Image (cartoon, rainbow, N blue to C red; front, side, top):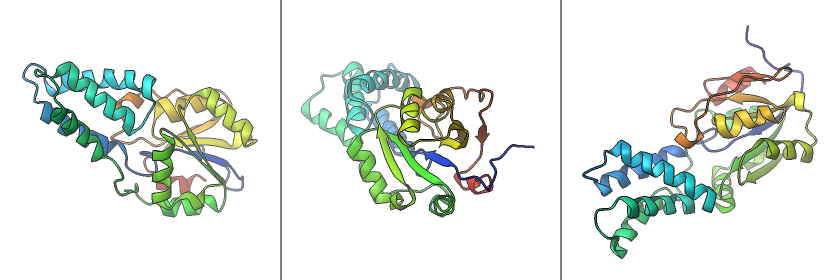
Length: 237
């Protein structure tokens, strides 16, 4: 029988945003598909172009962090590496246009997210924990209308065990009743477990490839739940 928290206990739920509450990576994937089609490389397959882009994105994250600004640099750098012709101002502008199509899109909630947050916030303390560009992430939260469900919001440059430990100290979290909920093994689940928290993994079919990682088992005394949909949290909390 799958273990669940006691419904009588109040928990602190740290909740990821992108691809946990709303769609995000699908917009980048569409932009990448258009970019690869535009590049139309005659020697590299689309899969090989994507591998180059993945490597360049890793480099750009180190230099520029996360978000559209970093993504734009990655597309330009990849185009410059692979283009068989010099990159003219016109080509440069065209490549940048793929990032503009990602910007300020309407928020597309995953199924029953607002209703589930309303249910959870009445019983538990919710803290939104997302990484990325401050202005971009703040804008998405504001457009979503979900801020009212959260006691606090944290936008961090990276999600590592040390960050989760800092958040636990800041909000005086009891680790036995604190859960990180998200779709990314690399950013949401494994570092939270390493920081002594519990975790809820909600797989997403389009999780960013750079967030892929094997999910670690929960250390002794901690819990890991895996659910299929965000709405299923109502069955556990």
